Structures are given as structure tokens and as C-alpha cells.
Length: 506
Image (cartoon, rainbow, N blue to C red; front, side, top):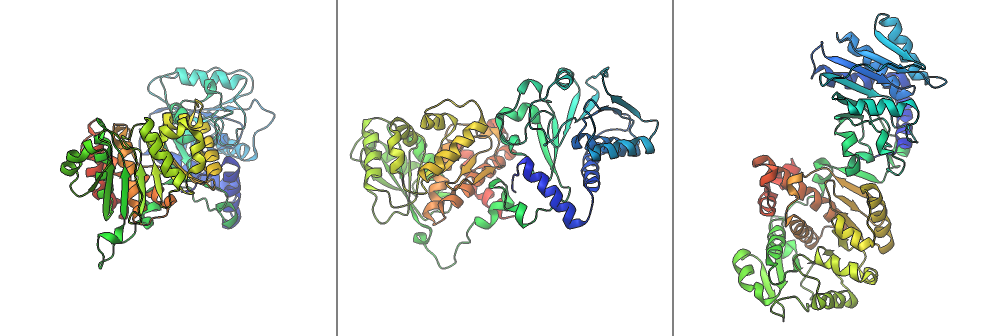
């Protein structure tokens, strides 16, 4: 699913109107009907509802919702703020229709003086003050109204987007004056802002309501940001051939581990073996021999010359992909090992994680030696070390990841609640699977193993990263469903990979 900017969404609205021969009021009625369906299915007719409508089209949505709720037997209090010079055309039309069809409705038209209603924990507030057309922070009396609603105990539903929140990047947000919704019902497409952790207190839980928007060929090509679900990646999974053997599915090399950190290697190797790879070789220090042979007997073991750390590795022609970093450490010998690999030129697809990223952050010039299409998988802290700057929000972090991926011609997997895969061409694939139970030791090592496996099988690097991230998240969701989020360990994610493949295939 594509994620469009506010301006693109306006064009899509217009495209739908032109294609279907309808009016903008008809489209507004669809949106209102979708929201009212959600409310009617959840609340009794005697529910105390307060609707706050602004002067623009978001206010028009709110007035249409108010009218349809009255049709359904609800009796909401409606507050229309007419403090600007005029209402938008559609807001005005819905205002007049509401007054005509329900002349006795509890409708207050606020021009100057506003006496706020008493909001309790039993009150349902519907926020229709401002929508995606907002391009600057709220000001004047609206700031006081937002503070009043936020300070109440009322349950808040926002229409399309919480009032005061910008729908795209967050640089213009004034967090003091944004509605804190419990639920946001958004239309047709999620907003980019919903995927940033700093906006979670405002957006709450969000649900996409289908109102039949139809992009044409022009508007459909606008966005390069995608929200990835199982429908999007199902076609990426390659069918396995009947007449095949282990060599058909590639040979991956994992350079991983040091004394005291062989667990990361075990997890990465197991994840690779459970993701369809034919052969996995683990290059690790000699101290890991017994651990690897007993924990992952399916993997081949290649001992380093050193007992405690990896110091040197040769990539020969039998390998189809390289994964490096889990549990590696970042001492002088490991740094020398990575420097030699990069200086000699890595000719196979590669994923770098964990301590490999730590080494890159201490020697940023090594980024220029990465082969085109190399995949880096930093979490927030690792990315900030790479970027050499503390970044205070997800929005800015994603923008910087896009710039770094383009500059070095690499793929960045920016890990988080909504892991984003960033391509060198400026495409962003935001993952929608996974849960907070996956915030556990070793989860990243599992992801590295999955990516290495897919690369070895011949998946293109970008597709391998997108599929691996989603597969990883679906496995985590299955593990959480079968137990609970608190229970999950990295091994539970690995154990659920088979069911994840089946679920994605449908």
C-alpha cells in the first residue's frame, strides 16, 4: 500500500471525483458513513457524544457524521467553530443540510465566545477540527480547546488525522497543541506521520477506512513510500523446484561470534537454515567449534586462525552471500578483518549488522568501500553512531537514512517498531508486521540470518530485505499469539518462521 503526502491525497480525491462523476460532497458522505459505521457498531444510542467541527473540510466531515448519527438515533452535542472569515464550501453545505434536516439538533455555532461542555470519562469526543490540509501549528483559541480536550478524561476519536498533527514529516509539529486521540479513523491510506514513534501519543490506534478513492496513473506514480503487508510480499516468495538439491538454494557465509558471544552466531545460523537456504557456513573463532557443532549441526563450521575472535576470512567462489557482524566484537583484529574484506572488494551480496556497523561508525571512510546494494541493518543507536549525530525523532532519522542510502548506493534497514527498508533510489518500505515482544536480545541476529539466507538463494537485495523484515515480523506475531509478547525470545521467532511463510502465502 502506498503512503501519499497531503497534497497527493488532495489530487487523488479530485481524480476519484472525475473518474466516478461524483461531487466532493458525495466523497465526504462516504467518509462520514464509514466513521459512523464504526461508532454505531461500538456504542449505545444514549452515549454522550461531543463533536468539534472546524471551518474546513475536516469540519465538513464532522458535520456529516453528526447528521448521520442523528439519523441513527444518537443525540450528539455539536460545536462548529466559525471563527474564520468563512467556512469551506463543503463544510458550509453540510452545515446547512444539518440545520435543515435536524433543526432541533444541539448545534452551537462558535463565533467569539465558547463555553466548553463538561467532558467526563463517559464522553466520546469526535475531533473534526483540522485535517490533512493543515500546514502550520494551531494558534489562537484552538490551542486552548486542544488543551481542554487533552486534559479531560474523555475518549477521543479523530477523523482522518488528529487536529494539529502534520500528515507528512514532523518538522512543523507543535506537540503542545495536538489532539491526543485514542483512535484515529483515517481514509483509504495511512499517513506517513502514523509510523513515527513521536506521534504515537497523538494518533493512538489507527484504522484505515476504505472510501473508494481511485488514483489514476498520474497520481499513483507520485509516492515512493510504501506500507508493506503480507499481500505485498506474498508474490516475492519463490516456489521451490521439485528437481533441486541444496546447491539450488545457495550457500551463505556468516562471519560472526567471539568468546562469550557465540549465542548471536547460533541464532543467525539457525534463522538462515530455517529460511530456505541450501548451505550455511559459519566462520567463527576456534572457541566456537563445540558450540556450533552441537547447536546447529546443519551448518558447516570454518574455524578462524584465532581462538577467541575472528581475525581473517577468505570469501571463495562457493559462497553466494555474506552476513557479517552478530557477536563479532569491534576490537583491532575484527576491524582489520572487515577492512581487508572491504578493501579486497566483496563481490557477493552482503548484509552488515551489529558489531560490523560499530566498526563502520568508527571508520566512516569504510562506507565508501561498501559494494553497491550492500544491506546495513542498524537499530536507532547504531544508526546514530553511523550518522555521527544524535537524532531526536523518527521523522528526521528516516530522512537521514534516505540521504545516506542514496549517497553510498546501499540499502538501509532502519530497525524499529515499524522497520523501514530504504533503497538507494529513495524508495521506503515501512513494515507493518511485528510487535513489541520482539524487542528482545538476539532478534536482530535472527533478521541478519534471514536476510543472508534470502540473498544466498538469489533474491535481489532490496526484495530480500523487504521480505526478510516482514517475514521476521510475522514470525514474531505468531509467537506472540501462541504465547504472549512478554514471553517471546529470539528462538521463538525462529521456531515460528515456517508458520510465517505459510501465513504470508495465504
